[in-house]
Image 1 (cartoon, rainbow, N blue to C red):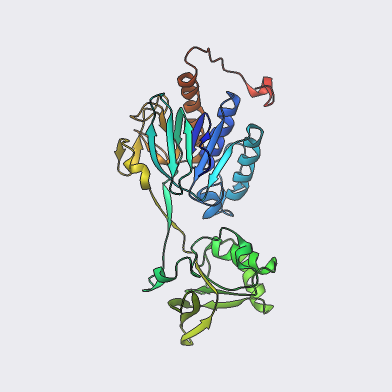
Image 2: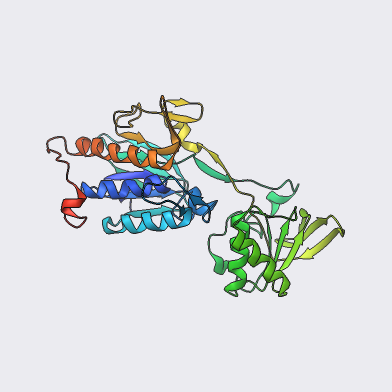
Length: 339
């Protein structure tokens, strides 16, 4: 097991609110390390709707969700945050010295005097299609999230779904010439994704680079030690088998509070209750910001999460350095390097 990761603030959740908190903490010379169950930073903005425009970010009349994440990563970069991705925060315990130890589902330990929960709507679990034996092939050719595209190099891949994630990965695996053969199965004639991506998928099908199956669903899986065939039920053709090495159903993710619900925090209707003075929870030293928290008048907006993270780090600084005076400095005067 690797040595524990020590920092000033452990941020559980690497979505927009968590990323902006890195910047605000950095201005106070506080180091941050982020934990997220998803394989990349950005939360829902990266995983579910990277090409969806957002209209209520101050200063941006319109910005794509993926671009917002890229900008937040760039903004946080000078403060060199650490990341533990693809792992979910599972346990927390408080040591005698007052510091918290947060352990992930893979055993990675993180130590800090402050824990900030910025988990959005919680831990994301994949929406699984109703295929009776699908669990038999999980990690044996069935994947719900593409973590490393190179994993599919030279393979036959069947993707199911009609949203941005299914469209984007279909295009990527073909344009980058990674997969040997790609089939996209969608139960309708129309897609929910970005119009440019939809057009690109139809173009790839017309060029013979993509096997596009519309009005169809994957209803079964066949194989031995791994997936060998998917069973497709199509409106016009009926039921038939298609050989493949991987089946990737991309039907979105369902958020759940997950293990955090067992941390002893005060929970109300699936959200963490906080004090609006500094967004602290009932456990001193643990805060909750963004969509994961609740209080009278709460609005689940990214810009509200930015505000909550900004006030939270002020309180965190005073907990870590009770004898230091905290003087508000403006980036317009000091820049970023001046902090």
